[in-house]
Amino acid sequence: MRVLVAVNYARSLFSFRREVIEGLVGAGHQVVISAPEDVEVRRHFEEIGCRYVATEFDRLSKNPFKDLALLRHYRSILRQEEIDVALTYTIKPNVYCGVAARICGVPYLSNITGLGNSIENPGWLQKLTLAMYRVGTAKSACVFFQNAHNRDFLIQKGFRFKNVHLLPGSGVNLDKFSIMPYVAEQEPVRFLYIGRMLKDKGIDHLIDAAQIIKDEFPDVEFHLVGGCQEQQYLDILKECETRGMIIWHGEQSDVKSFIGQSACLIHPSYHEGMSNVCLENAASGRPVITTNVPGCRETVDDGVTGLLVNPRDTGDLVAKIRQFLSLSYEQRRQMGLRGREKMEREFDRQIVVKAYLDELDNLRK
Image (cartoon, rainbow, N blue to C red):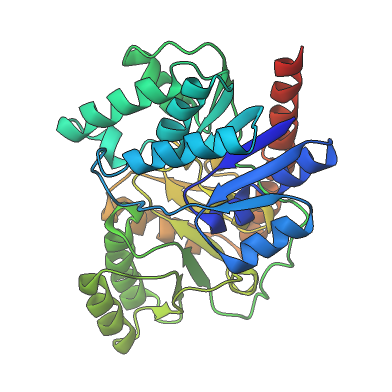
């Protein structure tokens, strides 16, 4: 089959969907990728035989009339490339490529990677986004969800899906994120945060917690990895670094060395589809402290592979960090090992690859 893969961000395609695309190519499918231009990502996928169509994308725009150009673009790709089936990820490809596929009579599979603030919070934006999702997924041959909460939320809102499949998020590449030796006992305890410096990622709570913990445990370190576009957080991060509260490393192309030097991941996010950061750290043998919200809590067995924190609760985050610090070195190491076992058991990315190949086989029957 000739398969279109539509995404809104090329790097996410490379980081989280690469094995799916390689699996499609390995099964004999011809793959056409629609994504924003990225030279490195384009090169990789063209080298394995994919066709790459650069697609202009304003990921932050909330104007559906402005985004109608996407609908025309997808319709053009579907017709010119003679696509047999489309695979879509995230809201705009799900909506606009989904509608274009319906217009062209092409079956499509939607992947809802998370709902986000636009749907989670009541208001006009929620109503608009739900209406768009309803149109975009109405004729989907299969809707993949990354957590049960997102699935149940939309069903409660009256969505009726033809076929639903619950995935373990994007899964985790267990070879790329292989288990690492736990940091040496004589090393300082280093907590690691990986993600954008955004309010929704819980960065305010993390910074406040770091200040409290550093006053009690001066040798503990808080390492933050990720980009920052908001001036208010740039100023806060610089001030906190000057005061010795945190060490901010900025955006990094490879986070494995940071994981290897850490004792534990802290991910205080407000919401996720499924947290890839939690999966990757657990697969590497690191305990995880994260919030008890959909997309995060599934990645942790509380008290076994990590600790769950009440969302938006700095006090509880501080309490869980203290609880982790009260554990012996061996208890922390064992927590990380059990996290790796959980990833092998429940989150192997090959589970996701098989789900897509199975659904394509179903379409051919």
